[in-house]
Length: 366
Image (cartoon, rainbow, N blue to C red):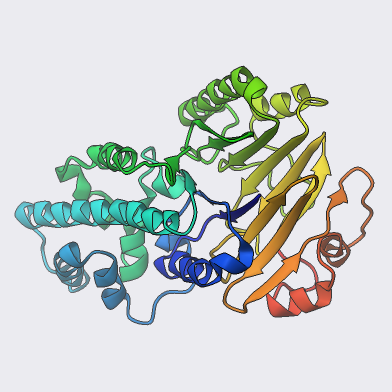
């Protein structure tokens, strides 16, 4: 069984690049499932601004762009924007939000025509933060408050629920939303820990909410274990990520406890963590689990493929260079390294080539 794992693409160009590549190479890779582990939205996460931001904005939301651009130009010119204009801007931003969430559904449906597709939600889609509105000030180079205050004139809190209702209405045997739930496919239990809040260490109200959702989900897994012999967990909350990415630990106390409880149970257990900072994959074993720290699609549209049979194999795919690399699996308890380059060599056959190709530098490639 082969599954494509995509995460943190953030830009329309990145996700569409991967889609076009998989559509062209579906027979080559013999894909059984596609899992998109959050953050389709989030243009503001892209460090490279488009050459023509206004044209780009019109491509994202043709129905709202002209009004937004007009208001922004007035703001930049120092003209007074009265309440009526602010309300008009707010309605345009609301339209933008709906258009962007509708795009998520549209691109998911396109992936589902290639292979059955599962989607877990990321922080950029979360209703707790509505990161999507940050795309506009990023593209048009204005203070975020100018946009975020405009939506106070609207019913913007309903956007996510309408998106969720529409997404569920479009679910089929080839498209499944797994954010905060499970999906049993043959003998594999797929689980999506959603990134509603980036932090799940209970230190504030939103983090406590995230951790409670995670606990409820883990309890649901325990009730379903007898129906599956393989478990794959997709996590989109942040983990304990330091400047040195070589030591990994899930941030959620509930997840860490669950991993310990699962020792000796089930034949294959895989934990997949996505984060936008990783331009390379990390593939290792620890605590009776396979761990894949998943490549982020924002870096050259790269993604991974997991092949699961008697063994678990991982492949690193760079669609823009049309390169496929099989990763080596290492045991985190016995692995030895004294530099980032040596750590990279634990997974990749030719670390020098990869460092040069992805402009990683000698000291760090996070």
